[in-house]
Image 1: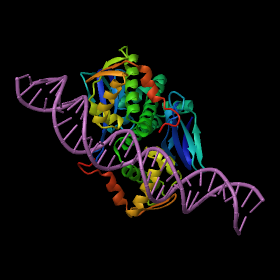
Image 2 (image 1 turned 180 degrees about the horizontal axis):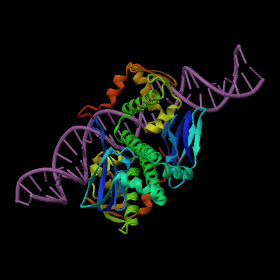
Image 3 (image 1 turned 60 degrees about the vertical axis):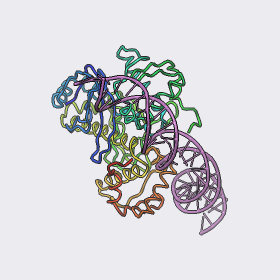
Image 4 (image 1 turned 30 degrees about the vertical axis):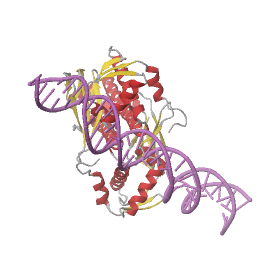
Length: 184
Length: 184
DNA sequence: CGGTAAATTGATCTCCATCAAAGATAGTGG
DNA sequence: CCACTATCTTTGATGGAGATCAATTTACCG
């Protein structure tokens, strides 16, 4: 099965045999869940709704039949899958090269853009996930996430009240992601 | 274009506008390069041969035509793409949750398995990439990679001479990846 | 209202990055 | 064949970002 999110908010996570666990992504309206199972039919990760949500479930077999009949759909599916691969590479870069503040800035900017694309305010939104889930996704501990939020607030870049975030200086957030030459 | 590696060894890397750089993977015989460009036709990363190599280039359009005609091929392509997504999630887990020794152990084990699958010795092989490239892939600095190699050697787990690695205790390497309960 | 989960904040420690220098290797040309 | 150079690797010393441990505080919900 593949699931298209109609409304709501999901988290995706991977669990290894040895107990290692990590949030691998968050999905909102219009995004697909379960691409990892195409072809093999076996999913390697779980998805959990973080609020009341609606999805549209599509069986793999049906999807593959449709795509062979409709070339446009096939191309569309390929585009979505390759976009997922590119997105994962972006997360790998984040996890491999960024420091805590850069990671959180990238995270907030990404959420902001996705809310904007859906007609919600890009500067004022409600986080559906906990600090721990954010930390897991960003490769940080929940305490570090909390501290970094506080620090951003001290700097006057954002205003946080628990799960409600208001971005007051998008420029500064963007600037955090533009690494200066010679920076560690 | 998609490239199927016939012989040789490649590294793949992503370069961001701000100069951030990371090796996103290594490919050997039988593996595909360029899956990120399917659908959009635009590649977001580079591939560099680390030794004399041969590839088979397949244009996207031709590939998509063939897959709509041959259902088995379509399913095969989907399987390969989703496997790439799953692989990326594995790297995300590595980058997000593992310490240096675990990362290098996972890296060596992965190489070992891939050499075995191709009929080469899984316990005795030649690294084609530099310490810096390994470090970039694993989210570590080259010095840390070198030190960790040395440490593994002191422990009697492997024997390293520059780019030649001999695994003398696979069990211990596997054990490093089986995180004990309560471990940091 | 209690009771539980989530978040904040502080103090300390650890792993890895950074800085620095020497040693090994392969490739080049005399 | 051997010096010569550029690149890669190893190893040591030091420092810093974030993890860990610990204690409140705040929100959430039956």
